Picture 1 (tube, rainbow, N blue to C red):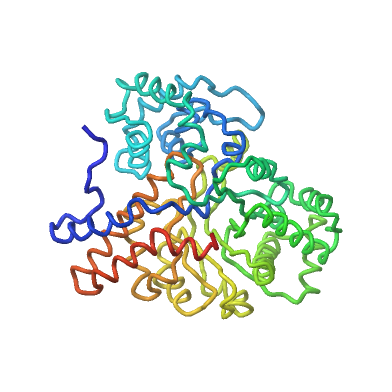
Picture 2: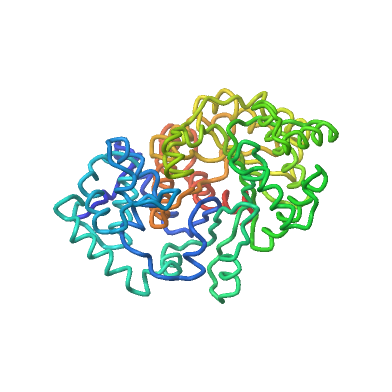
Length: 468
């Protein structure tokens, strides 16, 4: 018995399915390029055994615990930490039993497919998971985790990961990345520069964070010029630990290109706490343009992840902190929002700006036509709520006719759940092969072309776009 159907996600029609099978067989075992994600670099630095099955599959995975919470299960029952250090479940077996009792909530979701894939391909589990098999499954995974071949570095190599990027903020000393670099291990784990906590005036502790940035870089961040120089210094520091990209999780896609005197005045106002919400948004927009300007100088790829109302539930934010499942998609304007930055740098082929969206309606109407003409602009893959089989299929159908394949950047897994990485790439590759098979069957692509495109979508585009 297998948890995984061999032809999952392939077309139902036999002839088209056969083409998809042929394409997939060619790319199934290609190395994984993971250019954007949130795995913990400490795992690879210390290479210690994972704590227990719950800490591997449940507690760090907001896809899992947000679904459980939606059905009334407390986050503390799933081991999610509290900001105040208050009581939360720490017994991995108890968390696992709650997970098993409610596993049915994940039916037909991407999480279910990812977990089934990890259970079978990583841990050799082929029984259906649920309350009756909870303890047996827990004991089996826990036993595996005691073995050297299930340590983080061994799994990294078994997953055939060629390069993986974590994400850190400018105040991070990159201690774990330094340990990785000096360990003698050959695995390629790099960082990415995520400066939200020092460019977003509405980020908790912004003023203090800017002061810390100055102390860290020996730059005077009490003035605009010194503040920008501090970013340049930290970007170079991150590059010394392999960074090839920056990442920006702004509420909107707004960009600005103010005269430097106006930007300096706005920055001074923000440092005294006197700015309005619109001025805060304008500053974030100005910083996207400044980051693009710096990217032309230092070569870092600029990623923009806008359109999420982050930490939507105040009570959960107060109790558990950020990134606990309450980030909700919003409507976004890109045509007007990106214009100031694109007016300044959009025709520069030496700059790569990768834009993601949580507003699918913006693809065909805005982002696709823009990426189809601006040399600097690329479309990020289906992301977050849409990194599902249907979301990926819609992404290809919506984007290809106008932007083609080569104004996209392949796939990235964007995950905190390490064992889901191969599963997510597997889904992406299957969906892409199904789409390409449909193009062949309807006379829009030749088989030889499809073989080339399949390799590019699975491997080549991400490697090229992120300079990995």
